[in-house]
Length: 308
Image 1: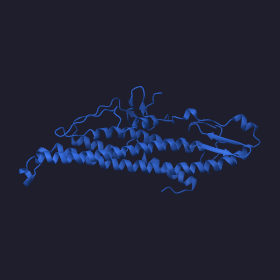
Image 2: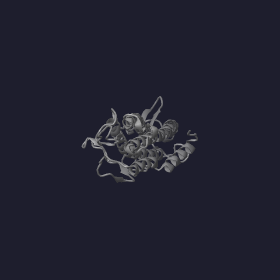
Image 3: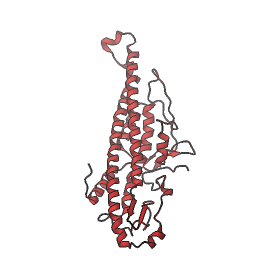
Image 4: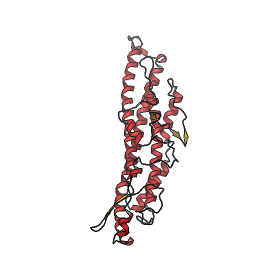
């Protein structure tokens, strides 16, 4: 099935496995000797344990994603500096080294080797961001998966989506801890996941631009939006609903809900354009970091735990 386009406010991002989640057998519940009050007492501790397992994962993955993004920007800055040094090599004064044979050629090759090293590090950081996004999605999908059982009654309940209302397993949406229900915890988790997934595909575009930077006097390369940047990338993007099986390429990125209609990677970039790329990376334009921190603080307070 083709994946739908994403945006920071798009509420349709869902788990690929959502359609196969199972619900508790209502007939078995009706025939069970356990009453609703008893079931609720069994359900709440299990729900609390699961949330205490999943939310620290989400918090860690947010930190991991941010750290990988910061490392990637550092590597991208080094790539840009190396590229511009090569481009403006002709106007550089080498001083007493000017009489050395092939001094410019040797300097260009050294900068190229440095650039290649930084590109490998940038790609590694991008892959870490993808991995963090996939794992964050898995944690969100597991948020409402509750196992409840006794010697007389055994069930496994799966939450289906943040939009469900009074579905079996919520016990009329009673609070899990003090104030908030299970659908609420799922909904705010999806809010975080949507932002990071949307920002990831935008950063992929910037990664392609940085990887494509070469001084034509030394080397040339040509990357396309449909190129797989590392082995298994498209599988990961498909998991995140960021890959179109119809077009055989990743979906176009969004900036504040506005989709890029086409992806054209430029070959010639001046220092101003590259500075815009670096600032765009730094700004995390599709992530409201204040809102993310607000959600994590609220969850930690609700569950009486401290996130590092």
